[in-house]
Image (cartoon, one colour):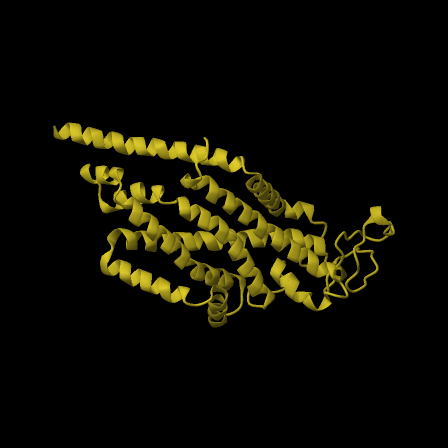
Length: 319
């Protein structure tokens, strides 16, 4: 009799694993049916390809002024407007399709390399915040009691401050720099993921397959990290996708204020900050970095909205 119960419990656990795989396949098909999500995926795919191939696509070194490049034959003028041969720029002038910035550096090259930094900022900060937030939220939701109270009260304190202001305060204490900016953005993002994971764990921990794992003699680690968490990640995935967009915006804001990436690092926010006084005399130097930030944030928001709809069972999708 006991063996039959253990066998049934094992079948319940294996069946739940297979069902989870099937649900992810269905979710992917639902996501690809949404035009907005597909557009977001295409944009992010292009940005990733640009980031990976920037060293071959960029015509000039993004850190070097044209004055420092030996053999450069162009007539140097500060904030030189875009020079495109196909649009009438003299053939004897070097081509700068987005012009030169205030420090006589090729704007197009800096824009391409900026995609590397912005995507790295988004993925790195969200990964850090998700790992820490998931562990804290899972422990609080599963263990409950004083552990849950301590963790959630700390998260409530962090949530009491506006995220950008708290990030500015952290960077001010740690000192300006890209690494400190990443750390600050990651810290202020932790509470959102901790609360999402805690809520999911509270709803999942009483499911039948969790009880089946307990009946098989599973320990706390196996129950929490192998049974509960994999089936509580749905809202976390959506939150993480949307969080990448927020992290990119926060990093750009910190760099704009001079607290993030430091010159001459090509980062879209710092490029905006460096040329903000030229918005009327050389508007293209402000427009292009701002447009790239907007496009990247829009793409991640489109993917996040598509994932939210695809993972929501209340919408009654047809598989």
